[in-house]
Length: 390
Image (cartoon, rainbow, N blue to C red):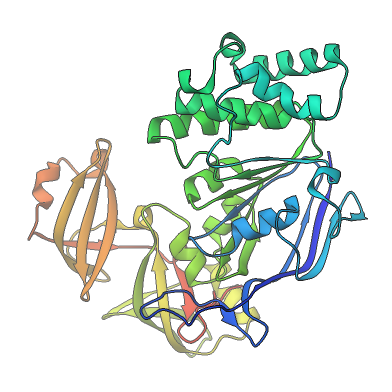
């Protein structure tokens, strides 16, 4: 039940060692040190579920720990419900945090673990019991209240960790990769549990993950980070349909977007077309208008197309040719890894749309033709990787 505002937040760590050879980190290094988080600006609404997502080392957990008060803020201002809390102790911020490692006390029962933060506040015993029973019911762990953590599965332990956080009825609930220790089936179940949970408690959620599937399914809005810098903020559908740059386009979506070298050209009438190999693809009217609005000049571009937006086509004009290298049978769909222009491209073909062909028809070494329409393409500048329509 709180609004959270992060304004020009930065975190600098002392640069204690030289950059290792072969390191992929592009964090900015100044005389002051390593900038782990750079000029982070975000306003989170009351009861909103915001997900920070990005690869390892992008600064998402550091940002969460600054909100929690576990990391000192180097520069910038952090407000919770309009109150500046930069110097407030973690216990005075009215937040609760769920960690990746559960962090349960092994010698205490489930009830004891959930009661502990309330006992520290010297809360009335009846109120403690009420909150613990209510949280246990919400999370489906009432029958485990008298067990110790070692007698629980990973998913049950994570429910206890979440229960210990929500009994405090915090204004803000922080979650740092809480599902990463669970297997795939349990992760799916716990994602559904978290969605149900946020519908039942009046709390603002800030959730950190490197798993973009979690981000897409859980978040009202997603904050995509790379090298300590926000790349894009938007709803899951917005970042999927309109990625701000090449990084976002490649990070969001499973399998990831295919990229091609192409040329953006313009005819005498002022209409744009994308030339790839000897094929011309006309962007949709909406994309034409966006390009005109941004006064985009003809240039070499990186063309992006999602695997599910590519269609298998019969031989003819305006089709591209590729060689199948790997076929993955996924039941209702076939994932075809196709060599095109020396690159691995993925095409997702629904088995119902193969025109009666057996999926084995597309075995390794077979050739195929494919195409895509102008309303599903994404165009990025070669120099800066930015979406030319943005």
